[in-house]
Length: 325
Image (tube, rainbow, N blue to C red):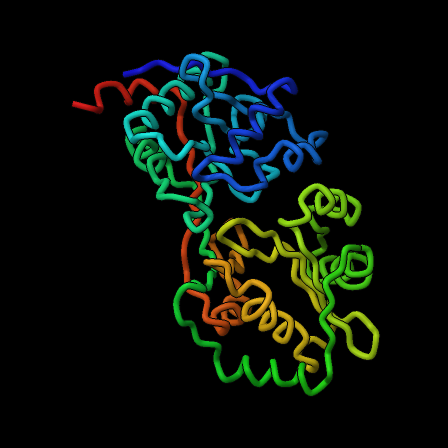
């Protein structure tokens, strides 16, 4: 089995990291260093690069907490990233090299939060097999509600009735470049009231990210009589449109504001994407499902795919010897 060189990411690797991400088969703009580093003060970055000689063949966006390395906790998904030419045997060898490197640097546990398959450019499930070989523990499995836009899907009668309410109330949808109105008038009050929480991004942070990734982050507000009543921030990749934030005021059911907005996004704005990913409807680390939210997503025609979270003991790199016979 081939041995690869593994080392920490440094700021001098900025250009080669981003160049690799731009052509990888299982990466999105979330792995670009400009996105990862907006919250660098919150995490101890411990991202890794894997080389075959002088050639970069894999990266791992990650942060360290004590003796545990996390597939970056500031990102929605992650895991080992590969080029489109890599073979299964090479992935097994890379996995061994990474686990061995971590083990020798005092990191005993690796937690991977895998990228859902809908975001990949090509089949990219070699890492799942490599993890199986290490007797990995499945920590968590999230159910994502996704519309396959390449196939016919059906919006329910109830949802269509709500969409017509939006039309009847003459709601106006506007794409916006400023986030403050939605954050201050809708999102922050709702999260505080319903969940006693705050969004991951501040309005200032999401604005900076949007300026850096204008084609990947778009925002839409809904207005009734010139007053904002709902909005959403969409993260966009080559294959997927994903609502990162969704919220409406107390009139959302009466006005049909969110249904009207999402019907427009799904059938018009993002109709050429392969998938529309509503994301999970979970609470309690995936053990409970909010039935009402799940029902809403499925009423647009969404079906279920999964995102897995793994935990592996780094000492198990020894189990990856002699796999290819």
